[in-house]
Length: 360
Image (cartoon, rainbow, N blue to C red; front, side):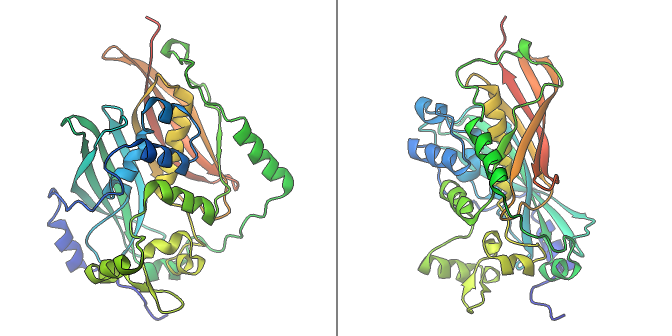
C-alpha cells in the first residue's frame, strides 16, 4: 500500500528529545481572561447546566482546556506524525473566578516509546503546564499527554476494525432524555465529608449521543487547536506545512478534521470520526462537580482516554467513592471515575480528589 504520511524517524525523535525540560513556545490561547461570557460558553460547551458558575462568577475548573493549547493536546516536533490526545492530570490549588487572567507556561516533560497494537511505533509525549493568575498565584499544575502514531501504519493494522454506527430506537432516546431530565446537581445543598461512605456511587450522567453538532458546540466553548478561517488557515499552513493535508477536493485542511471527517478518520486508522479527548475529561469533571456541590473543591482530576468515542456513541459517566481521609485538616474524598459507551466499553477512566466541607 502506498504510504501517504511520514513515519517516525530516529533522527527526528532524537532531535525532539533535546528539548526535554525546556520551556516551549506558548501558542495563542483561545481565552486568557475568565469573563462571564467565556465561563458560560465553556459550561454550555460541555453541557454543564449548573447555574452556580455564572451566578457566582466561578468557572468550571476544566475551563483551563480553553485557556491553554498545550494542556489541550497541542504538541511540537515530529511533523506529519499524528497526535492523539490521551489524558491530563490536573492539580488545582485555587478556583478560577470571573475576571481572573490565567496564563499557562509549559515544558516538555517526557518522551516515552510505548508498545502499540494501533501503530508500529507510538510515542507518549507529555508536557507540564503551570497556570498562574494575574496576582502571580499558582492556580493549577497539569501534566497532559498525547500519543504520536504513524497514520499509514495505524490504517494498515486496523486495530479497531469496522464498527457499525449505532441506530437508536425511540425507547433508547427516551432513556437518554430522562437521564438529562433527572440529572442531579447538588448545588447549594452542602455535601459534608462526614456523610460520605466508601463505596457510595455517584449519580450517573449521560453525555451524547455524540453528533457533529455536539462537537461544534464543544468547539464554541473550547476554541480548538487548528481550526482557522480563510487567510488565517493559509498563514498557519505556511508556518506548519505538515498540517496542510489535502481533502477530497484537493484543498488543504488540518488533521483536526478527524473529529468530523469520516473518511479522514478512517485514513488514520480509526473506524470513524470521534470526539475531542479533553471533552471527555471535562465530562468526568462535570460528573464530579455536580456531585460535590457548590461548597466542594475539585483538587485533582486525572483521566486517561482509552478508546475513541465515535460519532453516534452515548457516554455514561460513572463514579464511586474509593477512599476518604483527613489531609492537613481537610476532608478529602477520592473518587474512581469511568466513561462507558453503549457497547459497554470503557472509553476513559481515572480518579478525582475532592475537598468537602466538614461539620466540625
